[in-house]
Image 1 (cartoon, one colour):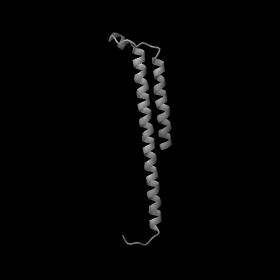
Image 2 (cartoon, rainbow, N blue to C red):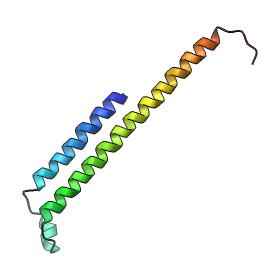
Image 3 (cartoon, rainbow, N blue to C red):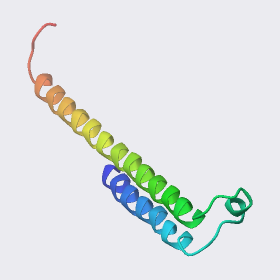
Length: 89
């Protein structure tokens, strides 16, 4: 699952950032009405930043899940080792 989240973060972040290149050649009607020049660059930059942030967050969740899975695996191994002993706790 952690590998899936890491791959999903990279792919989704890349796709969202790629949409920014689509908007690079278009003019946004709302920004034109607001009088903002170079709206294509602004809109593209917004998509690029949101793609990077989204991809980074999902990738980081994959890393966190990987660490949690390793901790669980180590605890399970420790419980199995300690189950063989006859200590009174």
